[in-house]
Length: 127
Image (cartoon, rainbow, N blue to C red):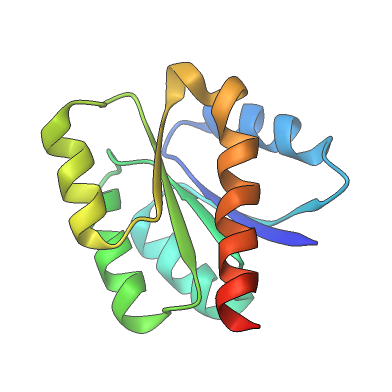
């Protein structure tokens, strides 16, 4: 079972993500957050396998949160999910430690496959 934490400041996006991912038998949504600060606290508490993180968040953005999580919680793998898909944002996400980047407009096509791929890589690297 892949345990996921979802982070987005827009309630309708969180709701859509939850509905999409809840249909998958190998995924469990362990928590949701609308700010990076809440996401970091929940990640420490819940120890998710995957953190689906928006870039644009109030306060600390998703890039800075990804960097902080990489330093504090190396087992938490971050998949950035964003409307902002320009090369600079992608570069910043990778440099911050994100394992993958999925555009929100490609979410239904790529997000599930990306989550499963990152979780499988994590399992292989541990075993």
